[in-house]
Amino acid sequence: MPESTAGGAVITSLLDTDLYKFTMWQAMLHRHPENQAEYRFLCRNRPAFALAELAGEVERELDAVCALRFSEDELAYLAGLRFMKSDFIDFLRIFQYQRRFLEVGADGDDLHIVARGPQVHIMGFEILVLAIVNELYCRRFDQQAALAEGRRRLDTKVLRLRAAQADPQVRARRHPFEFFDFGLRRRYSAAWQREVLSTLKNAVPDFFKGTSNVLLARELGLVPIGTMAHEYLQSYQAQKVRLRDFQKAALEDWVQEYRGDLGIALTDVVGMDAFLRDFDLYFAKLFDGLRHDSGDPFDWGEKALAHYARLRIDARNKRLVFSDGLNVERALALHAHFGDRVNTGFGIGTHLTNDMGTVTPLNIVMKLVHCNGQPVAKLSDTPGKTMSVDNTFLTYLRQVFDAPAG
Image (cartoon, rainbow, N blue to C red; front, side, top):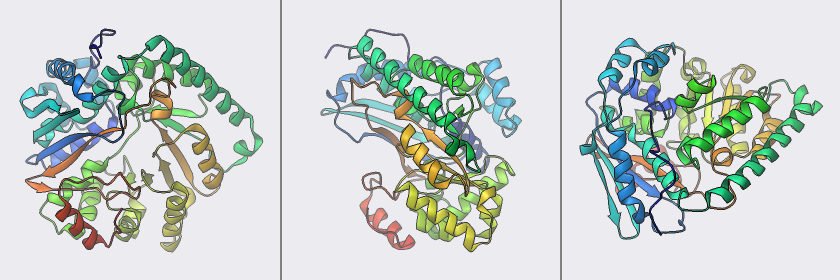
């Protein structure tokens, strides 16, 4: 296929990334600035053409990213978030991505992208790489047809949400239905994400409560949403703590860093059951709630509520955030199930920002695979989402946490 021709640079601001990149970045800078890390790109589904064809375009886009700097008004916005500390803002003021930490090329039909170097210098590449690959891929198809179908589907979502707003059963639940955009990493394009968020903000403001995209949160007056991702907890598998204690060490450092802010903990780095064994009364009281990202969400939610009950904690004062492959109907069904018992929130990604009907979205990730010269891994509750480049370490991790193969 020919190279993409429509559109300018994919990334034009370093704020065009997810909030949890900044929150994890600050924690790593303060707690483990010496970490050396490696992130690898992976496509989990079958693309319509060999992604290796994008290698040259991806390189040019990343060259452009490495020429960007944070502007003073962008830094002022970040500094206005009460959990961002002044020394981190000063670090960002002099920060610039360095191309020498990236390998980009073709590996047969596959696109080969590896970021390797100091973690505080490379961890931000993940979201930028994914947004770049997605948009370059989507530009190769009929954009007029995609946007027409995308707008039709967005209108359908708005009508469904407005119907839910008027539904007395939804309105009568103890806790309100609230959702947010988590779709930056797999968006059709930057322009389309902006259009989707603007539409939702104007059409269903009672339900639509924010976005993970810091740039669009700033520009559209939305709440930036996000706390931690898998890489944060995974990096503690390679710190100077017993492997069995890595989750507790990561959670404790988070508590000390944010002192009550950003209190949603991610549960599926070694599976929900293993997480709950570490999430004792101390952490359950300190954290505001939990985020689901793999496995059956109904089973996960019931496990979370049962755990709070065992600890004699009133779950009505906690929050469960669901963020795994959601669409509007699934989110509404989960709210119907849990909305009277616990605060809920729903982070919807691809279904909002890349539901165009004409091209199957890529299922791409860029995951932490080594830290400080050691392998790290994620043991997912969803088959196929487990990721490791070292099967021996993966087996050991399962043994340590008594986690089933999956």
